[in-house]
Amino acid sequence: MDLRPLGATGVEVSMIGFGAFKIGRNQKTKYAESYDLPGQEEVDQLLDTITDAGISLIDTAPAYGCSEERIGAWLKRSGARNRIILATKVGEEFEAGRSHYAFDRNSINRSIDRSLTLLGVDRLDIVNVHSNGEDLRIIDQTDVLEVLATRRDQGDLGVVGFSGKTLAGHRRAIEHPVGIRSLMIELNLEDSDQAPILEEAHERGIGILIKKGLASGRAGAEESLSWLLANRAISSVVIGSRSAGHMCENLAIARALR
Image 1: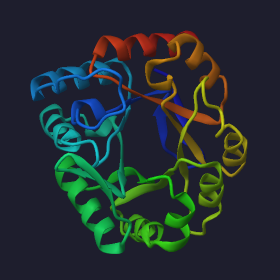
Image 2: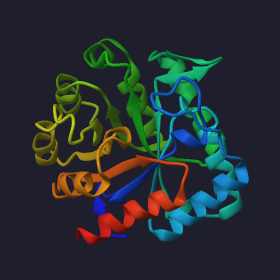
Image 3: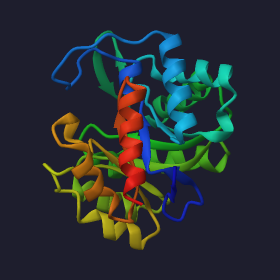
């Protein structure tokens, strides 16, 4: 699997990343169909298959239920840590069937500590702010970015990123003095509102991770990936799945586009 640089961070990621939502949470989702959570053995087989096939980026979050814990168990069993770029998030948590957001200093530090413990690692490669849509308020009126910068400087994480929902928020993020080096943006054939940030971020050496690139399954994979991966500003398209076959099909499409 070809790798692409995550901007000027020095990190390289696979063109297709694995979004780990569905291995940890099946409540209060935005998917059209319900699904059962896989067991740990199924998760292990899935992660073994897709990483052996060439996917190196795994994207998770505290809000993804038991996703971090299951990835941590797989990492302990597989010994695959040195082949994986681990991305997680701070700001949103999912408990007792509902999401809640907290961007204060104590909550963010607890979140980072918990992710390190659950994943069983001593360093997180990428940590994105998990925005609730109030991008400008989060950036301008909370401590979250300063806390991430401090933990980065202490060696607990590598790249500070922002997973927002507005063009204005992403523009503010890449201008912030803490040095955000990665954005996670929603972009697909049905919604291209965020497209203007691609070149702006690329010029600053900031990596771009794409979420919902297949429009939550509504857009065709071949057409979508061809459109997205033609843009060299995009480092990786993160796709969520419970199926190794589905992920490998998307890998094959991406490889054919080289």
